[in-house]
Image (cartoon, rainbow, N blue to C red; front, top):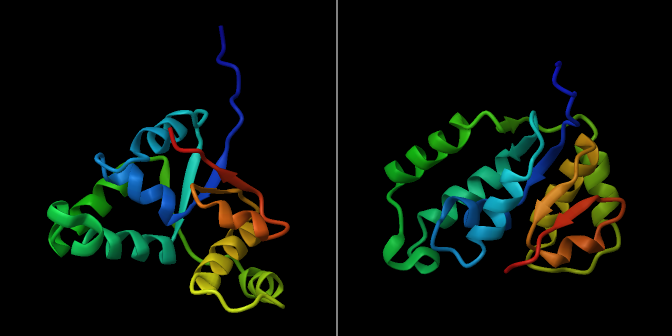
Length: 152
């Protein structure tokens, strides 16, 4: 009997999801892992350079990681292991990103996370993919489709 075709799903990864996924002792590791495992066959997690750099920065930051801080060499090994998983892909900026970024940031008051969050939201909008995150703050960006996960 032939296999039924499965619906492919693509989603852009936020750092708030990547870090718990990659760090097993993080309080949100279990729900991050469950979401990844729930992807249908052929599902894909899109990672942009900004999210990748955020993950590498946090994993090597002793203030964030405490005694589990990673050396730069260890961080690169973790990065390589992540991208050896066929569900993950590092993608370049979509052509419509700047237009989306300008639209999503227009009229917003200053916030320390505005530019990074607006960039990720714009990337997802321009790439026509939802953003997977634990950060409720992404709900403010319209027309972003966000998959805001809840901790256990």
